[in-house]
Length: 100
Image 1 (cartoon, rainbow, N blue to C red):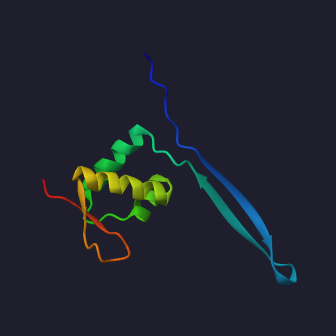
Image 2: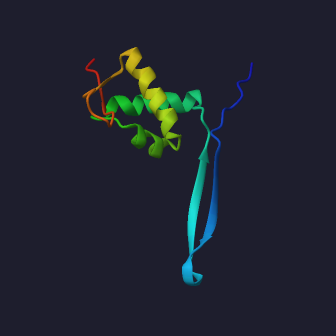
Image 3: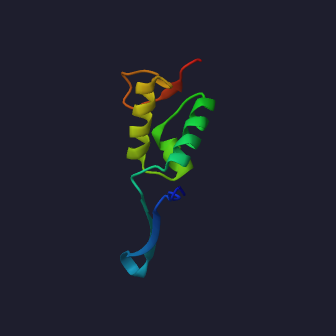
């Protein structure tokens, strides 16, 4: 059986916005896939265990995935016991790896 290679879908587009007095502003829009391939998920898990603190936005930027997808992944890892929430009262969720 040959495994089908999973790909991460990322679309980038640049839009020019018209401003006052003939000025324009260019905005880059990045549309990311909501699913994480298994190969990338293993890589994320390995990098998480090496860090001192983990934020969903850091993972999303590093691996080019959606922030919402990174949050769901961190929630799954917390349920598995790989990571734990640093302080539940904080609005910003900071995770730390559990000692093994």
